[in-house]
Length: 429
Image (cartoon, rainbow, N blue to C red; front, side, top):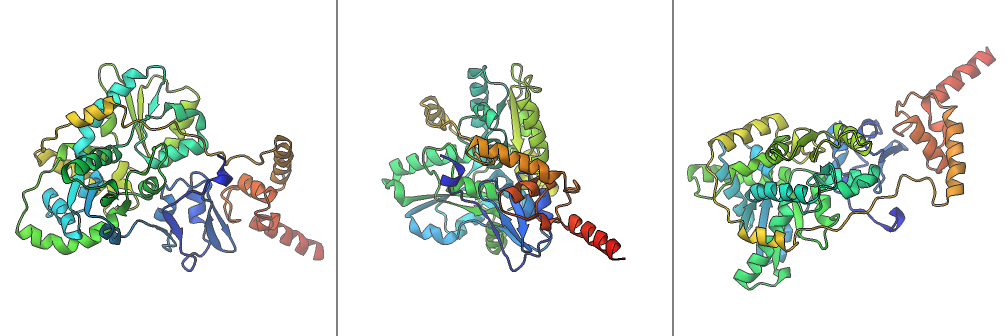
């Protein structure tokens, strides 16, 4: 299936009334998915990987991440929230781990479960997978949806290196849905399982999962939206602290570097990388076989890991500090993982091999593509090579490509226009 036949869902939207065409978003997009035309930003859905860089840098709040509405809960007889580990780092230190978790019940959830419950199990599963696939080196983590889509788009030769098992929240979803069906006698479509997530990419992954054999979750809510709603209930809970199981040891999953440290052992060497620019540099080196000495590489597109997601409300460094405090001071609830081990042994968590996103091509016809490449090179000789983005394209090469594809004109180059204007004034003088 080619890019033109696929309609990609994205959890980012542009508010045109707020957009001034400043090109700040254009300059930080790692896949050159954004253009400014007629003073308004446009996102190419085939290239976007939902990294959220554009959301972070936009000074006018013209690019907004979106998530589902809590109204969806009314569509189900039994609802479950699965909470990202980064959620618990968003609150001030007077709000305990247990209070932050208990407050979610007030929003209408029948159950609240945590990603942190299965992270110990995940470490053992990752080690087992690494040892069973010694022909693939390095194996690349697939927990970050942005990284998975980035590999599909820019590094398709590395797709076989991806860890082909479900992420923790999806593993928990599969387990809980079967468990609730058996215990409560409910049909599958009567159970609503929702994720509370730190970034737009996780919302996109729920609505358009890559490699999953079917949609697992019924929606995803942003941590920022949930945070605003639970604040109303937290004060009462602080006065009457709840007794509720928590899993502080598993909160390490939110932090950059920790997963690699836990996987690393006597026969496995692991590396951790965060920040989308760093991730792209490392993927380029993996592609060139400069990092074959590593068995496993954890890749997170956000700074400091999931605590850096664009849906979070707290500074990632502060959130990281709070989570570390919870890990140090908390007592871990017991988790029986025997059912998970059985499902893993039966292959229930395997995902299908992923396919590339073929959008970096000039034309399906090779002869036409060669002609267009020559045209691009000719146009490049006339452009200034400053990569200033003032034209609305991220680089001079991107502008040349846009011109050849009929999406821009040479007159869009502000530098050339000024240069020609000065030349005309000199001739007239």
